[in-house]
Length: 331
Image 1 (cartoon, rainbow, N blue to C red):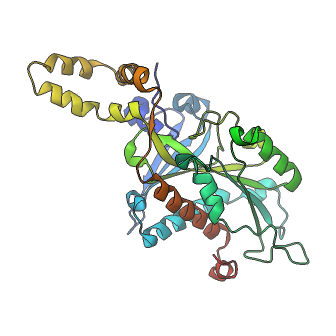
Image 2 (cartoon, helix red, strand yellow; image 1 turned 90 degrees about the horizontal axis):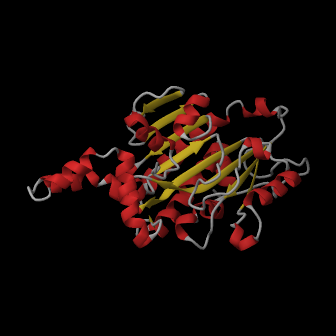
Image 3 (spheres, rainbow, N blue to C red; image 1 turned 45 degrees about the vertical axis):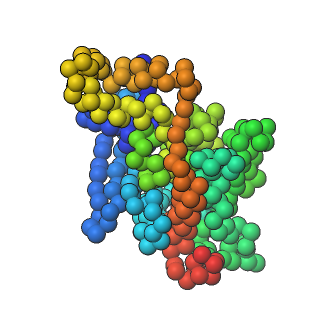
């Protein structure tokens, strides 16, 4: 059985049983008044839901903002504020769970995953390029001299195995040993099954990074189980499989075939195939000619640059709540 490649839980939910009810999975959708950002929260509650979705238990929050593809600073600021609000919501109770003593700063390590030399995979490094870290700015007491004194922010771009000869998990593991952060936030570029979600969707999850996910198809997991600290993952889809694009337009093709008596039989045949068999047929036709082809928008360089700034601002706003703190840090 062929599966349509996607890293988005909301798309996985839409494809399983036609988007209907799934045991062990809850879905909540909302949109704030006067906001054009659609929020979707998928919660995988147990192993039954995890098996059906092909993803681990946890919370998957999706922000869909169609205008995010445009150069609108005001709109991107709104997206950043919403991302900050959802980050704070997920972080609520983290101190208690990690037993961070009251008054001690929370140390957050932000990891920019991806290859900065490959534009669709350069989102993580782009975010880190805009991030204002403060772990190196400490006063005599050891607390950050810049920003909120309850947060220590550091960051790393570990590169990819072809550049370093090391697994990303190995590099991060060494950094965790030396710096002992309380939380890791991993930024990654994702693959989607719908072209309309490229560069317009942000996924935030508390399950970390799973093997095989992301544009780089990670070989090892970056999760609380593997690293020993909670891992939040922020991702934006930047590529879509060519076969998935064809699959999404199959209904239009069927309609065209039906319009002619000469090809109506072919339209009936395609319409009668289950979705997975349709996708298998498309893949068998495309892959011998083009391989496993992935497509990215022509303006992906500008999209990644904009989103790198938008996501970094969301992280800043999540931890530097006081506008004065932002000004002091040059944010």
